[in-house]
Length: 125
Image 1 (cartoon, rainbow, N blue to C red):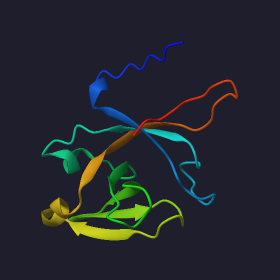
Image 2: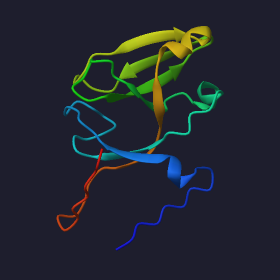
Image 3: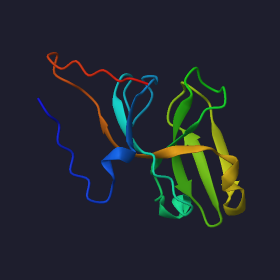
Image 4: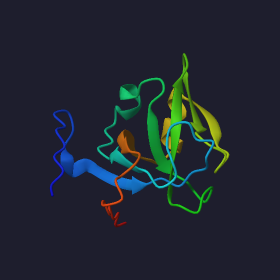
């Protein structure tokens, strides 16, 4: 079996897949789902982010995992990064000039939420 992903604006080599660890109060992702992250972070990365996008950043010890995914809310001169569940409590507002203080892994471009019982998807870190 093969999975074909047509990504005309993405380089498939820049995609990494990560298993989500979260709690039931997450309205966007379920525990154990898989997210695809575009790791091609260019200097203009933040200007390409839209309001409501999900970004994976380094957790710096806030979670047991190395990375965490947050939702971005764009304001006039700032970006609000906020956790999507109670699994970790994270919220920070960054000015446009202070965006380098966050180590970005990439932008979440799609997710797999559920699988048939016959599918055994393994993620290797």
